[in-house]
Structure formats: structure tokens, C-alpha cells
Image 1 (cartoon, one colour):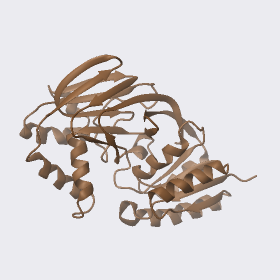
Image 2: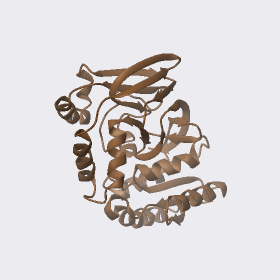
Image 3: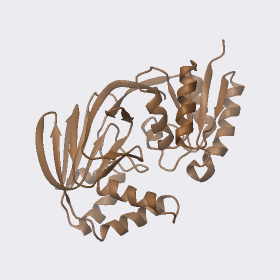
Image 4: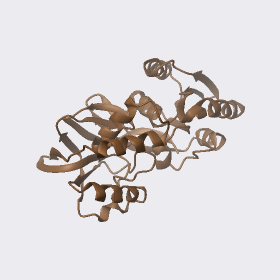
Length: 290
């Protein structure tokens, strides 16, 4: 029997790339003999319901055409099931696609990864009933994300750049309390990031060195620094060379609890939850076409 997959699309991702890439990928998948359920939710809740219903019906895999937000949604359905996730990258950041070296501007090549059926099994991070693939932002980065989400202009990456400048005017280091596998730690810090993977925000390698299949979380702390130094350090995140700054601190743990006043964390670019949060690594929880 032909493989049956569900293709779930966010048509507005990547300024409309989702809709364009969907049709290209859909044609390639069907030409290869796959039976494809073509799904599109009117909002995130409906998309989640469609994904859950398809998995419950027994599809062989769930393929998403969109960005990290849609991957995040699919992960809530697929975590621990063994059902593979396919990704047709069509978002702005596409950090999960970067992890698996998936083509980010070629939906045909991305669809071929699904057709080829080669998979990789990786860890996930979990807090309560929610899961994430990339990095939990808790600090200045999360506050910037929160502000950017409230802005309607400008679009794309420039919105986050403007939100960063606006927050820099008033931001002060936050008093963090952490529990790292039972070891208590207190720091006044600019941010704390909890990484399952290495990057967020479209290639910002905040948790440089993180591995997707080591059974551990990478916790990075950037302690108090001057605003000019923070601005100078920011470009280093794209290459992972921020690890050389004196304020950088890195821990590998199985579980971490992060607390700081007034912070709403983000993970996979999505609003995740107010601190305090406990995050654990759940080994071998997600299968991905790679």
C-alpha cells in the first residue's frame, strides 16, 4: 500500500512562502506515489486539531510546510509516538531545518527528504505537557520577543531588531535563580537560554555545542554586562564565538529549573510560559526525516 502522509501548512509563514512551497511540495510528494492529506488550519488551534486527528487516523508521517512555530505545533502531537516529522522549511528563521541541514529555499529538495524516508531520532525538551525542539529563551531575548509580538510594524527580522533597540533603553539585568540537576545557582544576568539544539532566532547560536541526541540540555547564562558590550556581543551569536566573552557560562544538565521575576519564556519562537519553569531532556523522543 502507498504511504499516507498528512501535509500541514501555514500559508502565511515566510511572507507567503508557505502557500507557494506547499503546492510545489504537494505535487512532488504525489508524483512519488504518496497519498497526501492536504491540511490547513484557520488558526493554531484548528491546525493542532487537524494534526492530532490525522495521527489518530494512522497516517505514516506528519509533514509541515512552514516555520519553527509549525514545527513546534507538530511536536506537541508527535513527541514520543515514533511517527516521523517531515519539514518543508518556509518560515523566517527555520532553525530546526538548519539542525538537519534541510534545504531552506528548495521545497522540491525538502520534499525529496520525505520521499527518501531516511530518519534521525533526536531528543526533545519538555516542561509539563509542552515540548520544544530548539531553545528556551528566558531573559532579554524573551522580553524582546514579547515586545516584537505586540508590534505590527515593521515586518520580518527588522521588527525584532527594532524591538531589541527599544528594550535596550530600559533593560536591567534580572535576578535569576536556577536549579541545575539539584545544584542551586544565583546570577544577575542578561539572559538564560536552555537549549535542546544550538540556535534560535534564525541562526543565533546561543547554545553553541549543544547536541540533539546526547540526553542533555545546554544551559547558557550571560551575566550582567554593559549595554555597549551587549551590542558588540550580539553579532558573535551568529558564529558561536560569544563563548569567549567573560560573562558567558555554560552547563550541561538533564533538568533545570529557571526562575526570574516578570519573564515570559519563549521556545521555538513561540510564547511558552511564565517563569519559573522546570525543563527536562527527554531522550529519543522525536523522529525526523533528515
